[in-house]
Length: 460
Image (cartoon, rainbow, N blue to C red; front, side):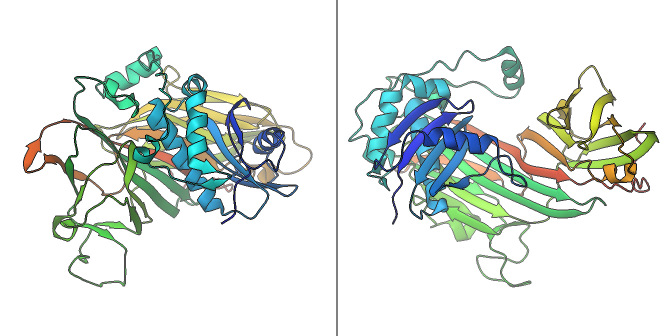
């Protein structure tokens, strides 16, 4: 196996938070090269590229908690191994520091360097198991105060959740009279692509069941998932004892943590396990089943005058009315010859829109929207027509990109039916914190330049 040459953590501004030269093969100026290449990607590539090659140097990176975690190598290193190792390093730092933030890393840089030296030996990955690292890492973490949050975040969270100081506790510190608590997060990242005619071209969900336990002793935990859950599609109409054909919850791929016990899995989809220290993913899964996307978007482009294009967007929610989507924003690229742009909002008191001339895009900030509701906007673009037809400029509008998160909602049919904790034959009753969150990875809607409004709803 090839070795990594360097490891470093950068902020989104390019500040070097941590750097460790593992083999002495490359200069420290590679941090500047990576930041320049990541901020100014080549034409036709996404804004963030996890694997880069420049002058014989391979850069493997992930973006986590507003920071870049980067490996460099001069040999042919597997990008998958590199990104998985970077993800585990980020999880270990989070477990030791309590939270994964820039402030936490700055205050615990000695601890972080000590962890890196144990997890990477001369560029070769070693253990990332918390119980093994505790025998070698002796530094005491400096905890970051997570109580001080912005008023806006406090208003968003307070109405839906109850705060717990244990969630951000370091695994390296044991407190007296600590209450027994367990945190279970069902996280799903959605990828959706709509054609210009409104047809769903691609839909995919990548999910994970993330668990963090603060229960004393060595408990045995039983977690029950959807009773009709099936892993793998197999042949159409195929039927077996543990993979019934009537399943409505189908996962194309699933990987389980090594601690998972499948003794009762075939009976009622119950997993038993003894949780390791720190945060871990009990299940990681992927499904491309035809689920119902949380948003439907309708568009219409029209010429309203010389050098002026109007884009009308109406967005509809498909999730239940007792659920809210937060931080919803829609990004619309505009033609390169756009001089200025303005917007007419259906609800200007709760929404806003802004045109960025340097980026040639309009961002529509909706914020919070309730299930079963819809809203619309009219974007007016003034274009410097250089003698061509406006029809050519219509093709440069879009595609739309949606960014959002929906708490207490999952698009797949995966559900947590129950969570039981045992110590021997005795059932315990710790505090259980269970939540589900759906976020967007890539949610794009292509725009029809023909301006066919036949299948679209009324806008105003």
